Amino acid sequence: MSIITASVLGLSAVLLAVQLKGKGGEYGIYIVMAAGLLLFFYGAGKLRIILDTARRIEEYIRLNHVYLTTLLKMAGITYIAEFASGICRDAGYGAMGTQIEIFARLSILALSMPVLLALLETLEDFFV
Image (cartoon, rainbow, N blue to C red; front, side):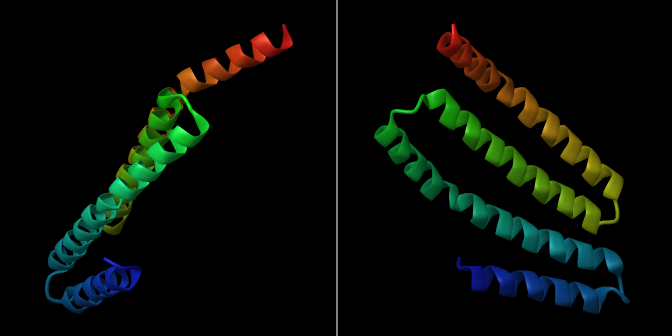
């Protein structure tokens, strides 16, 4: 799916939802959510390209596998949280969207702690 196809899908869903707003607002939300899920799964399909490229980069620079895995997990958490938060906001539940974003930030912070400790250990070895 190209960006043009994704844009047309998104715009069509929004325009259809706007048309249905007067007759039944909940149907518009369902249409936008369905289009959002389609875009989400097509976007997740691009992960194979990203993972293959990341593995090639890992081979070139002999990066520790744990660091690359952590980085990809952080990107995944961000992607999923933004998607879920956006749906909550569109449905009129902004507070729930904010809670999802806070949870995602805390998850990323917790995930990054081992990397931070490894960096501090490396700096300690370098300066001592």
